[in-house]
Image (cartoon, rainbow, N blue to C red):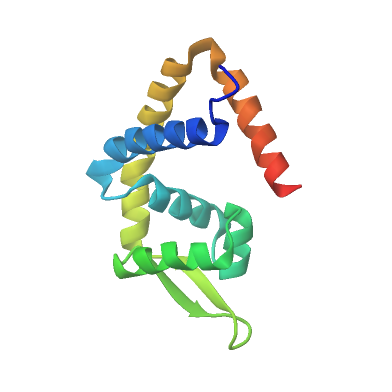
Length: 138
């Protein structure tokens, strides 16, 4: 890699390619990887507030809010009142649970395909991505 190669551009291109791989794999479930990510974490968290779920996902509330609106329109999640009128809880619907259950093995196949593509470099990729992520939160 030379000095003129933009690391950000390279990371974005790789992220785009990975997103396409996962989206194709998840297509039979009706989910995209962005939706799957939220539903998977929501299923593990139970009924978090929007702020709690944003923290779990490492997203700001406005980005998560846009994702949740898409999921709500699709019938995958619904909102209930929290402890006070300002907080809302996010709940996985039966349709959301069914889509997630269908998507999980498809996601596993995409994971395996990408791990195969990365081969022995996979651990180095994870390490590099962790460094980039940690730098972003510092």
